[in-house]
Image (cartoon, rainbow, N blue to C red; front, side, top):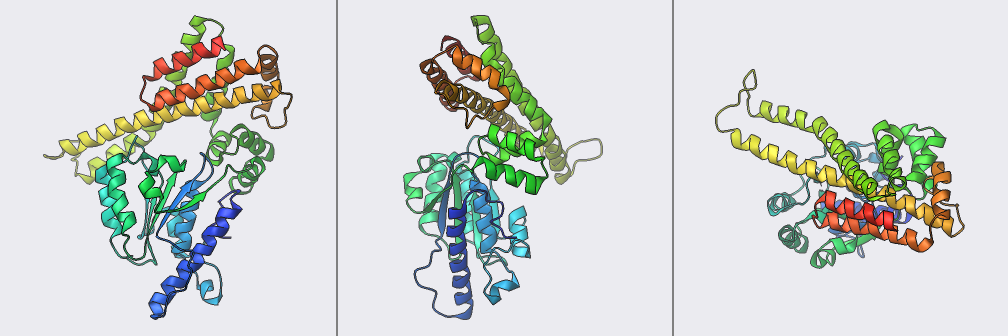
Length: 401
């Protein structure tokens, strides 16, 4: 067992991080012993993990953070840091280590205020661990102002502070920041590797694990959710029926509205699960009286919480809608594969008859135009176009082909 076990299909990245963790361990040991640090160290103070959704960027960053905090006694006998079971590894992986700050956002962006708080924390010495580690899982959501605040901290790091930034691609991070980070690129894990980890770690039946791994094209998180969440499977099935319902203008507009409604309902359900507990916890922390009456001076705090929850619901709805568009893209990619005479890597094998019928009834050029229409919809949503207008334009384009 080691901290790298959950990093699926990323052997090269695991090896690079393992080597850096060994050098980091040697550096801390040398400082403690007042001896010269090792030369040509593979350790550095800022890292940038990039890769497509589902590749495991955050998993890699967390695993590296755990390896940096490893306190296994086996290290004294030549063992590698990152045992996975010592207190340093365990608390880092579950997010309770005092010197590992894991930052993710449920909102559309990370602002200046939150980033300044992170920078202040980064200036502190480790409270008890070996390094002060900041894991920023959504570095692509930093506003321009927040990115400029972060830049100074990355340029002039405190001793034994490590920044681990995660983003889909290099282009999603300010050039001034990425130029000061060591860059690691993760790939989409092979379908077989994802299926194997679902069986081994989550106890999923092999045939189910294989189906969901193929359906999500190697996205570990989505594959696990499809395997364990009946609601997610139902929503995906409804989305994949959309191409059969865009025969006329009325069908296009109805399908668009239903897609928006489904995303809204999904966001509402997710929010209800989290908002209620969050609100009650906040009321208890502020000293709410029996019956829910709040003390004086707390109305502003509760209003801020409500605003934050509203922004989070908007983000959740967009994420749900984007997930549906990704599934649609995979559907038409399967159609295109059949039009070119191959069925070796279909994501939706359970829909082969439907895919084959659509493939025979249109041309590869028409399928490509449909895929481009879905991509254009995703771009429009990213630019804050009204969701219903963007999706209606897409469904009309799917009809026209």
